[in-house]
Length: 384
Image 1 (cartoon, rainbow, N blue to C red):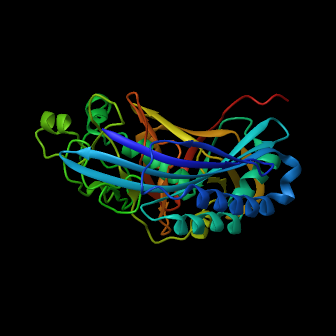
Image 2: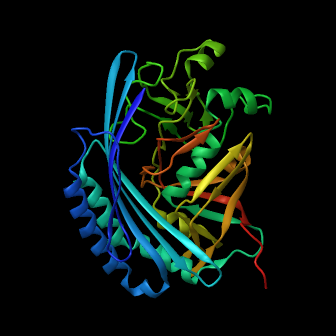
């Protein structure tokens, strides 16, 4: 059984601090007073960064969280500590109110690495650019088929939905095999390598033993573009007559473990982001990820916004309110470039949903990826 302890501090737009909850006390929790002081300091830095856009912000808040999870698995007590930060803004856009959310986490590492991530996001303009897109971006008006370059967040979400869920052994048996897809299938002509490795320390999806007591191990799902292996729970491994992969995971209170991803990532290539963009005459550079969904062979991933690409260069033309949709195999076959800037994303708030076991902690990673063609679909019809 999981025992979860947390302190949480929220700083609202007017600088008022709220203690959102103290669950069960735990000596590994960060001191609440120190957490509150740091949240005030970070909120001040956030206010300074967002000052040029203040008149467009209906609200903003910063949440700083300290958590401890103690779990007993196969007579072992496993302990994870986590510091996380969440920035939430509501932007008054020209068409509607637009939520802008940024988050970061530092598992088993304390506040200093988390502060570095937060300060980097402010210095790089990452949060400000999302607000800029919410204010000045144009909603996609019609379906487009065009080349895309995906930043690491939306690229890793695409791989999560297309490769990751397809490689969970229960989904493989229920959806992919009946559709004619089996291990040995070539997803792409590129030398794509996709790995799931819960033993890669320092991430939300990291662990030494899964929830069935199996030791964590590295699984190479795709090797040089070819489907090489799957993620197994005890039940699915026995069903297929193979060794467990250490991916039997369950959310607190769930009756059984399911094969789930842990730390899944695309190994880096050699190209730069600029080189991928330079190959596109007319297309879209997709930034950030609001979420994704998949069922059977179908998938949907939703970028935060896009920048039009013309003649191999990024323009200042921002486009919003669109999904990338399609058939998993067809989309992966369009892969045309893999950059070298592997980036990991840890979802401290939220997580992966499957089979009624939702918000499972996991990690996804990817470098920039390019697709020769993708289907971009408006989220809603725009009135003229």
